[in-house]
Length: 363
Image (cartoon, rainbow, N blue to C red; front, top):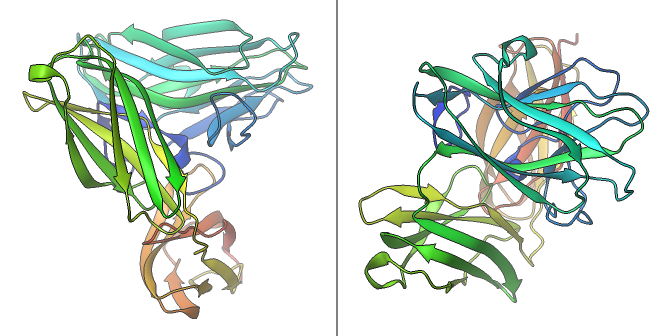
């Protein structure tokens, strides 16, 4: 799927990857409800968690029980068709006494009352390392559905981690991908991946992105399997000699000989060159009609200003042309409701500013 500003329902395959979120609270187009006195779902980063070395999603019970919901964006599903929900999960605390609880439902609206169909239940999550979940489900009628992740851990536990949510048609996988990884070597990025089996595989389109939102094709790597079929482990690699200055995001589009395709996980590689943009000032703040954003840029480049509400929904996106040094850009916020919004600047070469708060509704 491709991310859209409007957050309209999407078709499968659906991927929610949390490394691409433009704000610190929730991924794009997701929403949440919290009925308990414990903490609700938030984006989280702790590289010490095995298998969760990038930004992930987490909720915590702490001294109170958890009763928190996280909903995906709407997904178009066909009645009578079998789909597969896959994701990775684990707990954040290492103590054996920590026992987390989570179940996953689907329903016709992103509310707890609408989550009538159970997909999977994990009443005892004890794994600190990342574990894989894969479950098939079949809606009776066609329509727009939402996947709901419900944390219901007891009090005095630690936290639940969830990442790489994928909804896809439940079919035999033409290519079983063992791994897709990358690393920086000097000014180049080395991408490597392995397959366990391949069926009818044409090859892989390696795609690249400066912000993890919009991807473009970088190279096509043909299948090593004879006629696209293999039961042996096959290894692939590609060297990107011209990555973006800050962070470069990569994914694989695996293509079948019949034209069908699927996507891998996203790999983010931090560049060796310092090319950060900095938001120096937002004035006035609070504001009612428009604000002036002061942006310090290390080079002349294009950029995009992303404004999201606290649920993670993109409410405004504006292009900007930055010159080296300080830049002042006006943003019209007259159409926005009163409240707190989060601003981030993403430049064309991959650099990203820190998140800044914008308050709408002041004098």
